[in-house]
Image (cartoon, rainbow, N blue to C red; front, side, top):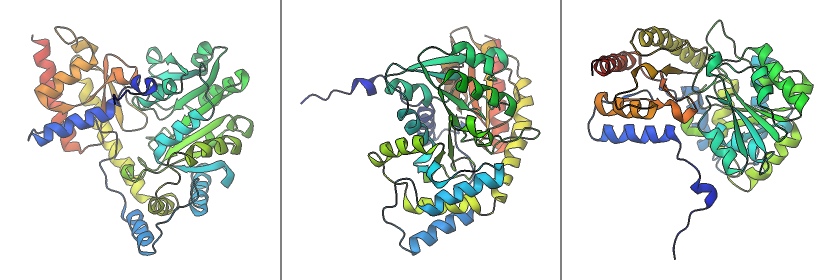
Length: 395
């Protein structure tokens, strides 16, 4: 029997961020001194109190199926977290746990998007957004933001709305640019959705990574009539260094949540039971580890951005959030290096520095540099990039 891949899947690209991770692992296995700026996850360990909660769950034999949306205690803990940190109030019927933030986004999209619909995606974007849209047989409509410093505005959204627009995806703080949409502008964007009658997904996986004077802002803080348009998709992966635990959540109007639960019940069912107990502790336990991570990321960012801007041929802005820098390398292209993928490959082969090509995020001519790495490694990596830059200019 001949295997034939589904045409839906055949059109998909493997996640470029995961591809970068695999290439880094291959080089390490060969004994190369690889400096990884491609990682999309914290380099910190999960806080001890969260791990202890998981151990207690094991000791108490909490290892059976749970409700698909998550145990009641977890839903209440997420509600408490949002109220404590943002004065955003939700009901249990407006909450579901998911297998990571990615599943929250996939299910939120799949439950409202029909074949032939248009989905607005600001560029640069997280690599998975357009792939989900295409998988659902809808059409991604990109909103270019580079000309405005990668900052999305309501006017940009309005200009790209079509008669078939069904959904807009907002990601703030943004991966890969680190930009944060100001609260007033965020509200104006959702007002456009209200006026034009389409839904909004707010990807808030980096919500807590906002560097002063910027402040975290969630769509949950919007007035009720606007908030009903928005599904908030969040995660404990980044904020609490729990990437491998696979725990996310969604917050939105109960009808939308119920539609998502239909998909959940026929795909993964519940999130790992032990992970749910750990996530309760993450949500309502001590938050000092999270604050310590943020302070360390800020220290790294404040060293990295000026250092990159001192390299001839590279320029970048200072991100207000997340833990990425989107660096413009157009000044180093040419002479055999035609695009960001060529540059990233050259950097990996010659200097053993891993970065992610900007093309993967709709930002050709740029590279994404993750500073989820030690400051010592960041310094060594920037030295290698500077050396490579000099050699390219001398060709």
